[in-house]
Each structure stands twice: as structure tokens, then as C-alpha cells.
Amino acid sequence: MKILFLNPKIDLAWFSKSQIELSRNTAMIINAQPKVPTEFFHIIAVLKRQGINGLLMLDPHIQNLSLEKTAQKVAEFNPDLILIPSEIWIAARCNIPFLNHVTKTIEAIRNKEIKSKIVVSGSHGTIFPEKTLRETGADIVIQGEPEMTFVNIANNLNDLKSVKGICFFDKEKFIINPPAELVNMSELPAADYSIFPVEKYFSGENLFPVISSRGCIYSCSYCSSKTLNKKYRERKLEDVFRELDYLAGKGLTKFTFPDEIFTVNRLRTLKICDFLEKNHAGLTYTIQTRSEFVDDEIMSALKRSGCTWIGLGFESAAQEVLDRANKNGKVESVEKAIALGKKYGITMHLFAISLLPGETKETISTTMSFFRRVKPESVSMASATPIPGTKLWEEGIREGKLKGDSYEEALEKNGMIGNDFSKDEVKDYNSTLPVKLSFSSGKNFMANKIKQIFKSPKLASHYIKKFFKFVLIKFGGKSTSS
Image 1 (cartoon, helix red, strand yellow):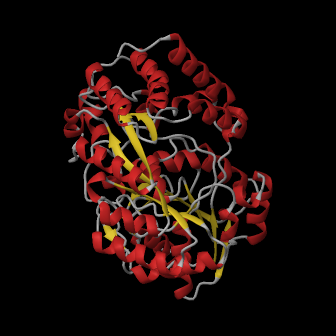
Image 2 (cartoon, one colour):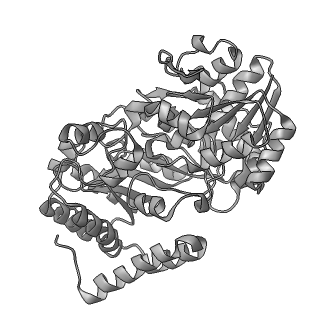
Image 3 (cartoon, helix red, strand yellow):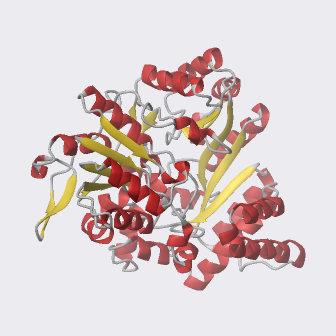
């Protein structure tokens, strides 16, 4: 058997202007930057253990391949089975809302009259499997975590009805198999990077992801973690360390732990920090966590081991908004975490969400006042997106604002679930709040926007509008109704 792992290129030219604009200020942005498909490397490790060695990986973005050249390389390899993710698994909580890149890639492959079975993984197929199959033209869609399910597909390609966690068409009949068990992360082997030059991902500002754990112990209403990852699980530290050793040997200098709450297990965190400090003093890295799980000892260990940036789920400074979102966190703990970041010289980046259920003009003012008073070093803001599969999405269906049949409608109702804001008010806040936030948080907004214009010429008009909005608010005194 020959198996191809294809990480599809995301070209903004394949998405309409309305699709790009619709995804702005949401949790699901069409991001054309290179993405590391971490699940590929774990699947490769499992297949190699089983004696399957006819494996090839392609990444058109990294290898600078056009769509035509990609299809030609697929034809030359002529695989029996192809895996294409709609987004990398670690990004599934904030996935790309449209499947244009997957559809374009599959169309190019089909035009070469290749008879391979094509499998699509990701949150689209998990939530809307039939729609995903019809839209992309794939043969099989994976529901849930992809690693072991894809291995089972490879081992049972002639008996798909026996494979849990997949959907497919049997002639005209749509088949939904029983769900697969969650991946046992402690038994998933260390990633095998041998079939692809992973050092190509190290260039520029890219941070190579190394997964230590998967899942979350919380159930926030706006996050799709529980839909996709179900529960918190840890990998064996010796496997994590083995991967870090290998990558450092290949020239890695900057990486990220994409774990949802990296510091939730205190002893484990300290062990990882100790390993990095003793064995890889030259590496720098970033993490995500919650403010409740950082203190002086943890921050000191993170600093000594090379951590430079910590992403914190902040959302809002209005406690009533956090409580309604089932955040189970306190605003005060975020303020303490920001102070710790300044003490240890680690950037504390706040992920803020506006227009959550229960949001009012007064709670928005509370949040903006918090930024002006605390002055966090780094903040990003998106308005509440009812991502399919989340409790926020379910609330939108109950309210009658969502039919619950697509990602597109979730974007159209962005910021409008569980509150009384109109579409025009949401548009105004989406345009104005990030700008007001930028000069109240100490962020160099103007320089950042100019840099983004040069990096993404196709989006220049979007950033130029933001730039002039900033000037209007900063120097002209214009503000939203908040």
C-alpha cells in the first residue's frame, strides 16, 4: 500500500472577498500562513510500526508547489490512499470556516484521473460530514480525532463499514459509522519526521508545534474543545523529550506547546521546564494556559527554560459575562498573571472576546476600562463566534437565530447570540473595539498595521481601513456607542 499525506495550500485567491471579510474579527479567520500538520507525523509513526513504508508527504506551501505541480506529484506517486486535513488538528478549535482550499486540491487531483481513495479530516467533517463529502468530493470523512481512525482506514480499506469514526457514501446511501474511541495520547508513539524535511518549517517567524497534552478540563460555551477533543489527556514525557531532541538537532530554535492549558499539571510543567533548562538552553518557546495556573514558581521555571510568550484566555473583564460563558475563572486572577508576566519579562497575551451572551454596552466599557488601567502588553480581540458544535452554537439554535446547518451562518450571526446587539452594532464594534483596545493596551498599533499591509498585499485595503479608523478614534475623538 502507498499512502500520501497532503497538507493543502491555503491561497487567499481561492476565497471570495465576501468570505474573507465575513471571517474577520471572528474565531475562524482564513489564515494563509504555513501550518504544521502534527497529526501526520504520529500517524506515520504508527504505520511504520505496522510495516507500511510506502509513505509520502507533500506540503505545497513549504515546497513552493503550484496546484498543478502538486497534482502532478500525486499522480507520479499514484497512492492508494490520501489524507487531506481541512485544518491541522491543533487548530481545530478555531478552524478555517470554508473548504475552498480542500475542494480546489481534490479537484486538481481528480483531473489527473487518479483513483486514490481520498480522506478528509477536521472539524468540518466532524460536525457536517455529509455536507463536507459533497462539497469537497472526498471519498471518506473522519469524525473526531484523526490519528488512529486513519490508521484503521488504511488497515481496512476494503471493509469501511468496520471502521469507527468515519462517514462515506455506499453508492447513493450515506453511511455514518459508530464514533471512534478517543486517542490514548499516552500510547500514541513519538512523532516520526523522517519522510519530510521538517526544518523547512523553522524559517522566519514560524513556531514549530510540539504537543504535550490534548484537551481541556473546562467547558466554556464558546470553545469547541469538548466537541472535538472531549477530555484532557497527557502524552508520555519521554516521547515529548525525544521529539524536542530530534527537532533541536535539525536546527529548531523557536517552538510552541499548543496544549490548551499547558500548566494545568504543576509537577509535569516543572519537569518539562527542568528538561529544557538542562538540555536545550538555546530554545525559546510559547505556551497557552489559564491565569489560575501560573504563580511565582511556575513563571520562574518557564522563564529559565526559554518561555517568552504566554497566551491567556481572558475573554472579558465583566465577571457576569464570564460566568454566563461557563468560564469558571475570575478577572482578578488575570490581573495577577499580567503582573507576574511583567515581573519575569514574559509577554502575557490576552485573548479577548467581545459580544458574548450577556454582553451590554456597560460590560464592554468595563472591559475597556480594565485595559486602560492594567495596560497588558499584548491583546487580541475577536467577537463571539457561535462555532458549530459549541454550547454557544446550540444557544443560537434555541434562540432561533441559527438553523445549525453550516459554518457560514455562524459567521453571519457572529456577536449576536445571547445579547440584544443588532447586525449594524456588531459591525461597528468589530471595527472599533480592536482599535480602541490597541492604544489602551500599550500596543504599537500603527507600526503593526503597516507591517501587515506589506506582508499581505491582498488584504491591504482591510488593514488600511483599520489604520484610518485608528487615526479617527485616536485623534478625532470618534467612538462607538459604548
